[in-house]
Structures are given as structure tokens and as C-alpha cells.
Image (cartoon, rainbow, N blue to C red; front, top):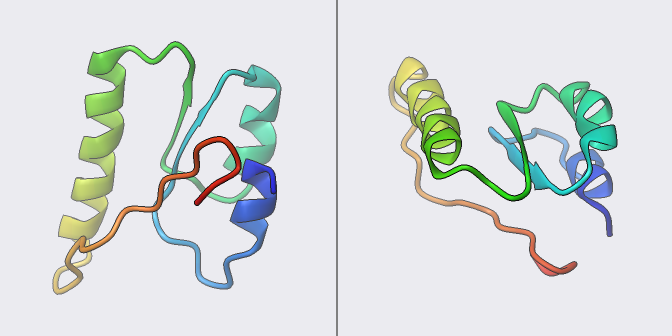
Length: 77
């Protein structure tokens, strides 16, 4: 399963940060309203900014706590 296929599999997509070595998927991933797209190798400061976007998103949705994170690595979720 590709990252794009994973995005497509959700009926109600949670906030997503995509991490990829390929910039060519960025535009397609943005069509799913992801919060951030990071290109490998990941800059730690950019990663922290992306995580802050997720926490800010949940803070703006008062009453919704961030209680899970999905990680896809080497085709495993």
C-alpha cells in the first residue's frame, strides 16, 4: 500500500503529515488536505513545526484530544 492509497482508504481523514523521499507526490497528497509534506532527509526543526500544526489543529477543535498517531514505515502501518 502506498501513502496515497493509505490516504484514500480513510472515510474521515485525520490530520496527516506525509514524509517521503519523493517530491513528486506532494501535489497529489495535498489534494487530501494533509497538514504538512516533509521530504527526506527530514530537518528536525521542520518536523517539529509539522507536529505543532497537528496539535494546533486539535486545539482549534476544542474537545477533540489527540490520542493516537498512525505511522507508516516500509509498508507497515
